[in-house]
Amino acid sequence: MSQKRQDILSTAERLFYEYGFRGVGLKQIIQEANVATMTLYNHFDSKDNLVEAVLKQREARYWYYLDSYVEKQPNQPFISAVKAHCEWLNDHSYKGDMFMRAIEDYAYTDNEIENIARGHKQRLLNYLEKLANDAGIVNGLDLAIQFTLLLEGTTSMTALLGSKKATSHAITMADLLLNEAHKGV
Image (cartoon, rainbow, N blue to C red; front, side, top):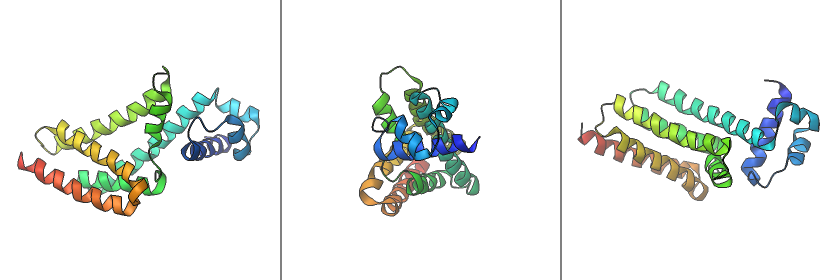
């Protein structure tokens, strides 16, 4: 990836996260990324195309966190996933969830942006269900839904409690969910 493309993506992600998708125009991105208008359009056909690329890049970074944590502690995949999610919140998502913002801002507009954002949420649910099934948990989908709700709630509460306190509560709740799930094994 060219440095200019990365500069545009990084600037756009920061601005979209701070001000929302609708609150940022291409002129602001061009100015803050310090690129020419044609440079932006050489890389992205439209603002929607740029938003899609930002979400895909952000999602790749999120999955890097999850996968690397779970690989480091495969004997505790759910706790590792919660820790990874909380670390992600601390590093990249302390003011809420960009994917939920995309769903809200682009709902019912028949475009790829909403599909990418909803796909991210579905992928998380599927990932957690696979962890549950691999661990031999009865009703793995139920546990996956519970953990998805836990992670989504942690994301919301980070803005109120801060990431450290939200993480502490999330780990406690994860232990409770796992203890209950293992009763059925």
